[in-house]
Image 1 (cartoon, rainbow, N blue to C red):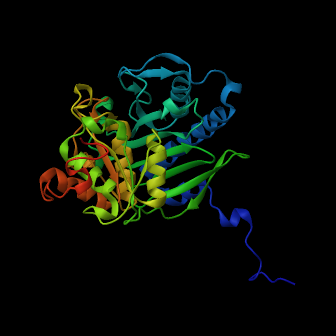
Image 2: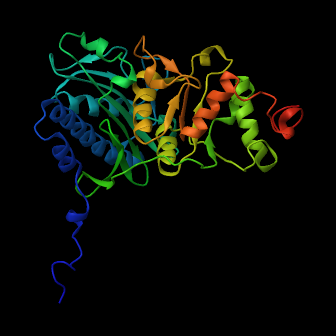
Image 3: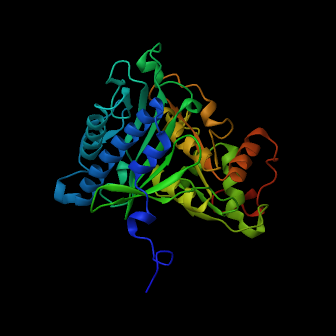
Length: 357
């Protein structure tokens, strides 16, 4: 007969729910309780969105273009549905203002509430019809009563209290930081409940993997081209190792892989006028991801400067974004500031090669 000390723990003993984790973390601290309530509302909306995404064409033409968002990008039916889900979920939480990619200006919710939420309700919507991973990115900021609620959304990323993303793939995962460390939660689709499955999320160094849209190579600035040339040169180049390239065209998919396996993601500015300031949004994409990546022992910059130190000037401001393993992110900065000479380029790509003739 198996005694109590030998009995295998049950499922509920093994896996802590998001609700239980947040309650234990918050204790009786009012601000923490408010953050926990807000995270739970986001998680609940994400569970509903996960169900909708899983229906695919059975739920209608989710990929159909229905207009344009505040920043001029095509807005799809699922973008609008996702924004509505999160806005409704947060309307009854201690959130003063909701700032979304899908709205030109922040939406005021609860006057005097202590928090502001910045959110990309549906990242990677170009992948909807391709049945590839898409996601939600969010940040939670303080909204002091003396501060204009809309201005609360324009604080530097270092002011965030919590941040995370949800990835809707073969499984739905929430990766979260509450300011210290990063954790991973998996959605149980049968109950709509998130369970803690990764108590520690930490980005490994040394992984020989990078993610970048190589079709833009001819537009990149020299430091970025040099970095990629050196990776492509492999064992024969200055890095002395072969590298693999990944590109999913979904920011959350790239981020989740890097959090799992290490490596680096690059979406640099380039010479095209519409890309001169980068393409990703600082407030509700780069800042939450940077806060999460740093909590997981990684780094995030615009190629040179720490993302979390940047002062946003407008809600839909764009930025270059480089994040991942600290050693690789630091190397990109070295290429930009001249610490590594441009002459340190693979012979294969120095004069003639796949990308340069």
